[in-house]
Length: 255
Image (cartoon, helix red, strand yellow):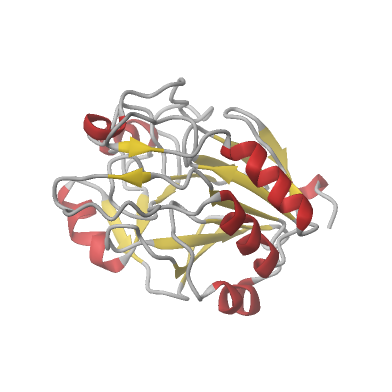
């Protein structure tokens, strides 16, 4: 199984016969009204348009559920896996929605997708995705907050070759969430490193940082990548600092 980090929280996952995308983002999201325009190119999958076999969506915020990007990328009738509460909106957008219950596994081609608990910073239904081809296994954690399910995830779905974890600790002010809390709505680097440690992931790759930042409405932490690498090192976690566009062949990752 090969995994390519895309921009923001996006991933492209490939086996010899199955291609998946997770939280694909290629167009400026409506979130940019608060978070500002993208500060780096928004990468599309390497796979030809109209050939991606399956998409997994952690939640419906516009920086994780890019309707036009999915319309371009997905093969006709390809499933879009999502939290069950999000399925009506995914269907309304014209996709073959499949709501996946917590701890349920959906198989598409050579890949298994298991929905596991996550907590959204603004109360939206959100899951994390465990993805496996039977030989390698990763977890993608969207933009979750810290929660108490890490140990259950490790016990029920581990071990993980790599964990993709958000790290920008963004403090966001949205019109529908007033008064503003002033609290991070996403994991901070130290929490992400702790999550990787609890998950007993062989490696941990930071995501969800660097692309968006605009005062006063959306403020990410300064240099969260370095903070994550240092926090991971203190815990004995191997930090895999994949830049957008970089690939990792999990069959060659030491266990």
